[in-house]
Length: 66
Image (cartoon, rainbow, N blue to C red; front, side):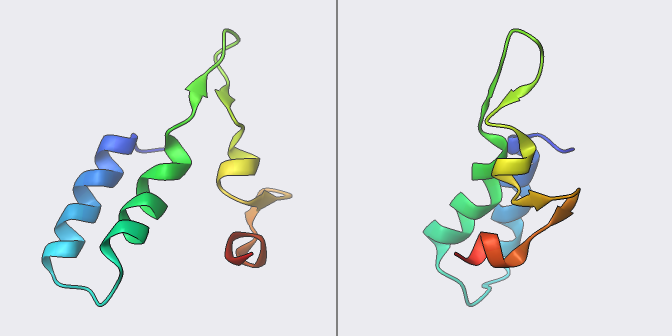
């Protein structure tokens, strides 16, 4: 998975293309899921299942929307 910096740079490029989106929400939505902390065991906290709205290894768009 790309780092949050990579997500941020891609987001900047997309915003320069003048997408019809709210800039703040778009930026947060692109970098937020990868801004957790790495625990002593090397696993991200909160886990990817939480930050990426995964259920059984798949993104659950309804959970994301809610």
